[in-house]
Length: 247
Image (cartoon, rainbow, N blue to C red; front, side):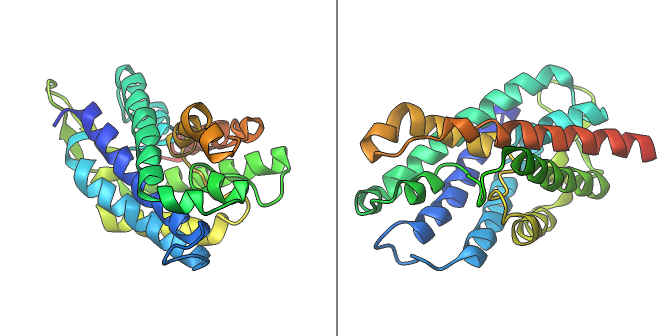
């Protein structure tokens, strides 16, 4: 499978299952309504597990511009592939979000609260304080990347190349990554909803804002949208810099 296609398909699965659990918990008249934060964090962890299984052998299963950029800054990923990876991740996030809408269409219609519907697409803070929200995303994504750097080590030869490249998330095995995401959600996710990933947040936010916002009577909250983009990227870059210094 082409590496870009693998990132695209893996991100679709990640967002479909990850945002799908949010819909199951937050929307009216679902089987899982009001089942809580532990359900959301657990399902997001296993969403990562499933997506890594699919794409890991082919692309390294980044699914996340912060991971892709962080690996490039670290010197473990080819900068020439960064734009293609990010494009595939963003498109995958948009389509995954639309599939969540199709799956829960009746439940979106049965839900009046705009915040509950928006949560099925993108994150928002528990307390809106942009500097603190930004710092929360930086810290959480720093931990994500810093831990990944320590538990990766395998490499692959991507199609059409002859040089081996460290493959990021896919090299650690799916279960350790799922545990890491689960721990981050439980420990650091309560402030901003632990976006950690611009493609997971901005992709679905674009789907909501461009295609579904009027239908659902739910604005995309563009004023907050920069936080789950710049925060994770900053955290990933800082993790790469520190790792290179101490290693």
